Length: 111
Image 1 (cartoon, rainbow, N blue to C red):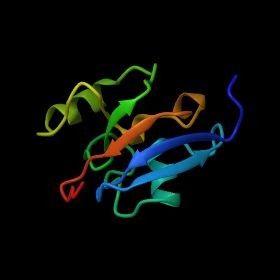
Image 2 (tube, helix red, strand yellow; image 1 turned 180 degrees about the vertical axis):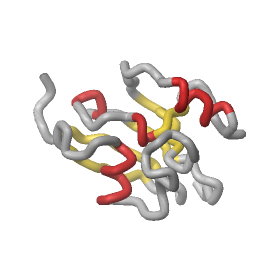
Image 3 (tube, rainbow, N blue to C red; image 1 turned 45 degrees about the vertical axis):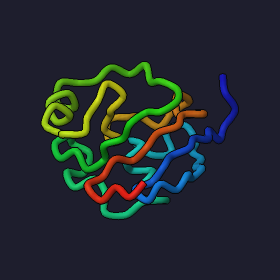
Image 4 (tube, rainbow, N blue to C red; image 1 turned 180 degrees about the horizontal axis):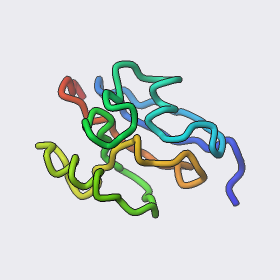
C-alpha cells in the first residue's frame, strides 16, 4: 500500500504544473478536492457527470475504476475528449491518484 498523503500533479488551464496532495477518502471525488483546495469555477453539475466542466486528460498513470454510462455520455459530447479523458467528479480520492499526472481541460485553455 502506498504511503499517505498521496501526491499527484496537474497542469492547469494556464499551462502551469502544480503538485497536490490528498489522503484516502479525504473528499468524495477528485473534483471536490480540486475545487476546495486548488481551482475555482469548476463542477457546475455538482458531481453528477452531466456538465463536463471537470474534464481532465490523464497524461501519466492510469485509473482502474471503470467509466459509468453517465460519464461516457457526457464525454461523448465534448469536442476535445479523447481516450485518456475522464471527469474528475467520477474519480474517487484513493491511492490510485498517487503519482498521477493530468491536465485540466477548459474552454479557456491557455497552456
